[in-house]
Image (cartoon, rainbow, N blue to C red; front, side, top):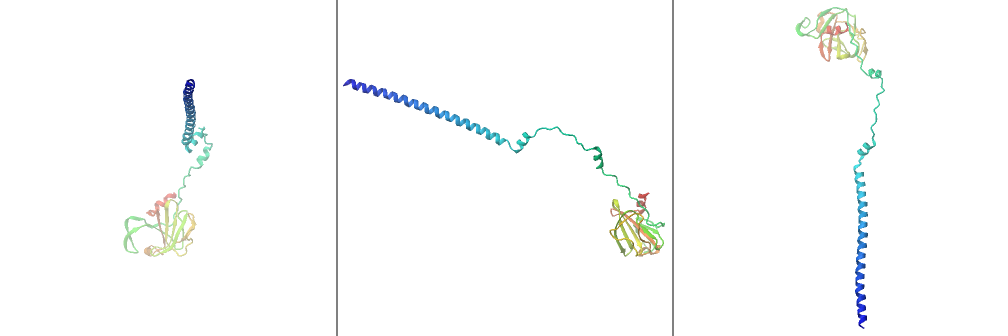
Length: 230
């Protein structure tokens, strides 16, 4: 009877240790599997993080830089003659000529007053008065475009022509029979009208042409303008 008791107690004691060993083994196996899986997850996470970082840093500009390879620059094949052809050509000087062949009977005077026998007072004179027989041809002093044609209350029938480089010529004391109109293109020496004495402030001069010149609206001596064509 006592042997059975001892045998049962011994078996129970051995069973306790066996169970303890099995529990320890189970814990060890569980820990190994857990750490192994954790390491794999960490490696996968680290790899994905590195890929994210790589993708995140490769913006549009970076891709373009990486894709662009230095190339050897080719020299321009444009011939020198083509470059020379783009150089602006020098403008030809303006050719000029007197509107009539008569002498100057009253000169240009913008810096000093001169006496006007018709109005009987002292005033500046913005042009020159050129002697001309009644009905004689009055010609354009240079190539240009007729700006306006009108009857001035003081200077009579008048033609105004614009030219290159800001020059404007004015022909007054003409007859009513004008041969041009606003917008007409005229050439030097072309007839634009006829001499008369329609300028009521210069009637004492008789038939003549009052010829005046401006450059960019500033008056200038007509003699200097006519000297451009010499």
